[in-house]
Length: 323
Length: 133
Image 1 (cartoon, each protein chain N blue to C red):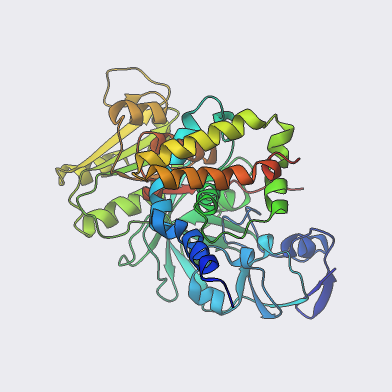
Image 2: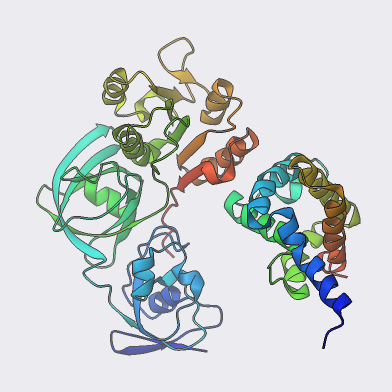
């Protein structure tokens, strides 16, 4: 079995064990979250040794060239020497805003120590001392001075609990990223856009929507935001104000449980969307939020005629339970 | 030295993928094909629980192979890749259905009939590996 060196220590890998699991098994406080190659929290850098291609899938080319890889996807064939992630990937950041948008969603604003190049809709991994890391989608635009994240309180959640209950303005964090390929791509500006999200799946869509408007997208844009009940919706007034200034943009808040006939659509989000737009050939879609919903909605949009290359998605993977 | 006839045969074989339109044709056909597979009651249940992006990549690989294009599948890849499906009951009738859907998809994107026959023959040639026998 190959061995890895990390901070001067050598560790051997068990059969079919990835680098992250080997480090955690040996008590190393390695930052991580989803353990499925999705969140980017376990980014590491190899000083020496071949990196399996799969461990670099989805990383930007500049990072690949510098030897960055995701530890949770890395099953090396040969010995690998790992160094810490460089300053080019990790940024210090200061909390500049904490505002409750709904009983369980907190708007967190951060000012990074240096500009973070990103596309609206991508996500970053937020890291605290001691290896605690969670990824959050970016709701702000690159030219805005602060990074905006929407953090839902998770029962027993370490990062969300800290942000909701203990974090204060001026507290310091690290930001790693950005990652993700769910963002607005300029061009085809007559194409109708469908943006669908549940819960804090609104965060990336809020960025993508404003990015599309900013780029002068001329085709109709329909934003559907779904929640279990009315209290789960947020930014409602802000979004209504935003779309009132743009005739081609529509905002449809929807709830699973609620009375028909009010100003909210009622029903499961996929039914609400597909009832309104049963034929989607030629459209572009963005789907964000709960992984099961994202998975099934992608397929439904595809079966309704949307081309697979026009479907962009960001499934919010939960942090794995503590073992 | 190669016999001229062999060279010509080789050119004909190599160009099936090009004759169909190469990667652009695969891209055009893959959505049509996968949409049919997902809605065909005979086979759709084999594709229900799998991530769409992963499936699209696999279907693209399958179409590229069927077009005689550059895909490095080995018999072992195909056996390993389908072993779990064979356990779930994958049999000749499902392979028949997929080859039929493949033909319909190619007709829909305008491929000529004589090339569709060649594509079906290539798909047919891996039946044993797919069914693990």
